[in-house]
Image 1 (tube, rainbow, N blue to C red):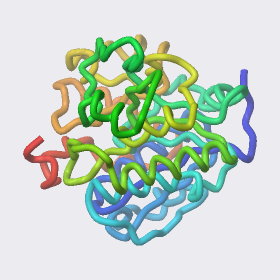
Image 2: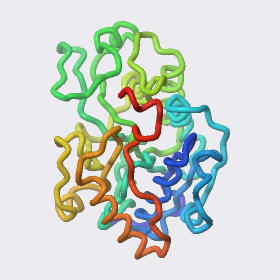
Image 3: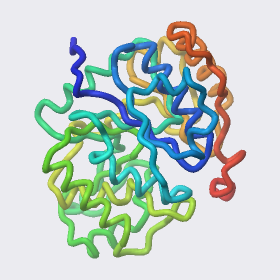
Image 4: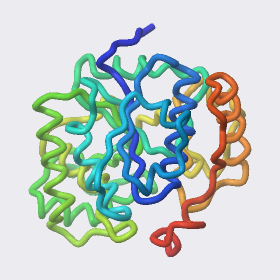
Length: 293
């Protein structure tokens, strides 16, 4: 079993709306319940962190105040800066609308970096050399053929999701994020947007190909995402034995989402002593940029 190191930790983002700070506090509490000594950094602005009390702020070893761009675009651009912002040599980055599972050991995730510098949740890849094929409901955010031509790609066009990644600081990761940043700022193709912004997923898919970097495993799913499973949520025991976390990243939430989220969050609060104050809500209920999606 992996053991803790002082240069390993989590980084979470909470900007533009109090929802993200609330969810960051719940996620941090659930991580601390499973691994009390692991450090967690929070990157946030006044809007994102305004509802957090002293106990909730105390869950974070580092609070990095920033002036963020607004909306989804701001969050996507900020994600391009994570290697610079992280105070750790090895970092787990997660979306905050996620909850850590009670039996999951976060230190085992850093073992994935033993022979690589970066890995990320993904739904496999499209093989550009053998015809455009995709056995997933994933969207590349632009036509893969257009992407291939515009960026002169061969080989694998990965289908990543930016909600969960593990990376080590160094030249390879610096270059990867720099390339992704240039893609997200000025895409060469017509691209679907989320809340008015170009997604980090679009940028990372291309950047991974150009940089010659691959996730450690095809279709790596460290977090159970109900949307990928017909909205179904198995028993906590079943999920806890196979995953590190549960993701609730969606405009609409499956019926049982609130129940399992509450169960885990309340159990975590009992262990840490930091009260659970912020229930889970679908983002589209109060974020205007989500209403049409």
